[in-house]
Image (tube, rainbow, N blue to C red; front, side):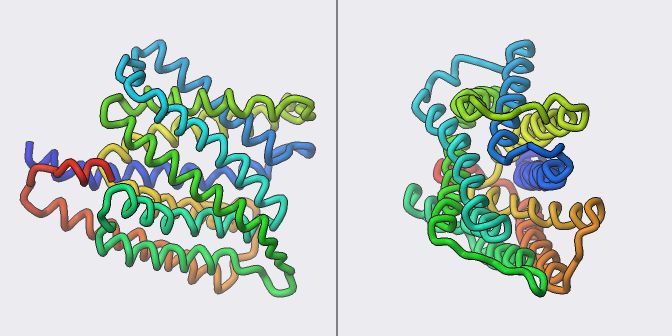
Length: 311
C-alpha cells in the first residue's frame, strides 16, 4: 500500500504530461482544417463534440454519480471558465496575433496558479515548482520569438484577453480539482465540458459551417473533440486528482513544446536557434518537476495533509 501511495504523484504527473502532449496536436490539426474554418467555430465544435462524447460514455458506463450535485456552483464556475477560456483565447489571437496571444496565455497561467494557490490556500508552491516554472516560461518566450523579418504587434487589449484566458484555465483547473474530492474524474470532466459546450453553442449561430462537413473537416472536428478534448481532459483530471494544481498547470507547458515539434515535423515550419533553446528550457523545467516527484516517491509514505490535497 505504501508503494502505491508513493507512486500516485508520479503517475499523476505522467497523465498530465500525456494530456499536454495531446493538446499540443491541436494547432497542427487546426492548420490542416479546410478553408473557411474560423478559430471560434473550431473551439465551439471542439467543446460540443468532446463534451457530448464524454457525457454519453459516462451515462452508459455509470460514471455519473450524485456526488456531482454536491457542489453545483463549483460545477457551473468550472464550465463557465472552460467556455471563457475559448472566448478569451481566440479573441486575444485575433487582436494581437498568434505568437503574442499564445505566449501570454500559456506563460501567465503557471504564475497565476501560484498566486491563486497562495491567496486561497495561504501557502506557496514548493521550491521545485518555482524553478520548473521559470525554466518553462523562459522556454515559451523563446519559442514564440518571431523569425527574422516578421513583425509582432503587441496590443494591450489582446494581452489582457490572453491573460484572461490564462486566468480562466487556472480557474477551471482549480474548480475541477475541488470537484474531484468527491466525484470520479470521468464524470466531472463529462459534466463540466458538456455544460461548457452548451454555453458556447450560441457562437455557432450564423456561422459558416460548410467546412465542417467536408471529409477533412469531419476528421479535424473528430480529432479535436474526441482526442484533444475528451481523451486529453480525462487524463488531465485523473492526474490532477493526485498532484497540486500549480504543478499540473506548469506541466501543461509541454503543450507548446509538442506543438513546435509537430510544426517542424509535419508542417515543415522553420526551427530557429531560439526555438531549439526554448524547447530545451521547457524540457528542463519539466525534468525538474519529474526529479522532484521521483524523490518524493522514494521517501517513506506519510499521511497527506488536507491542505496539500486541496492545492
